Length: 124
Image 1 (cartoon, rainbow, N blue to C red):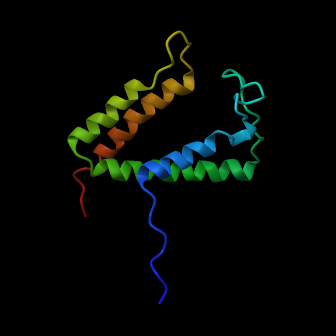
Image 2 (image 1 turned 90 degrees about the vertical axis):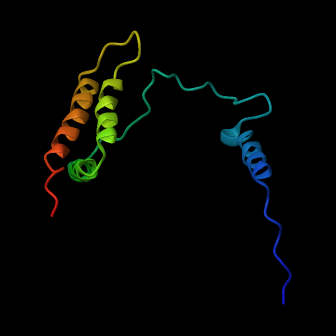
Image 3 (image 1 turned 180 degrees about the vertical axis):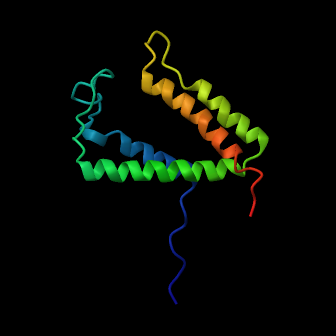
């Protein structure tokens, strides 16, 4: 019968080993990465979506919206309040112009909560 396996590593040792691997991630050397960091303002290249990919994404978003509405319909009043309040936290960073999509997303969050309220008392 084989003996017991290796002793499990402590959490601290596991964390230390994981962090030590970060030192050379991305080709970094002892004095840090040897390439210029990406600009926060620069957008990474994003491939164009084909119609089929866009349609599949649209279907998934609709499905996720409906799942969120279903979950919110069973939420407590406190949880609904938190979800509604989160809409007010969606705002541009200080000093930046509000983007129309950001404003629309905040309004859409509140709309999801209100749509869920229609199903709260309709239990099968």
